[in-house]
Image (cartoon, rainbow, N blue to C red; front, top):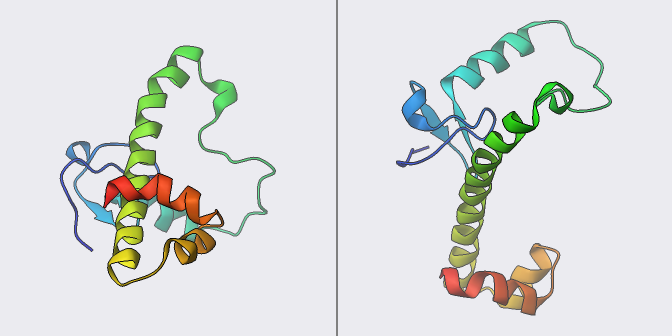
Length: 120
């Protein structure tokens, strides 16, 4: 897959300028550092699923650290939203109705149109 300027890792939220490489997928990206961590985790013993997600450890973060992270999470959300808009635009280009798009996204035709019409 290709990478585009301004992308950030969907897992650690680092911008591509802070890592060696970013691989883009449909609506998400992963950096080489997170891939290496995934390989390390997958090579280790299987662990039972945690009751709560381990990353980030909100209980150990200060309010300031949480607030500093908000723009990074928002940027990752925009990245996913932009990719979704591209998929919707392609469905519409191929002739899919707003009703079918809405059904696929589990929303009404009207809600799909209102959310994505201006992104075409």
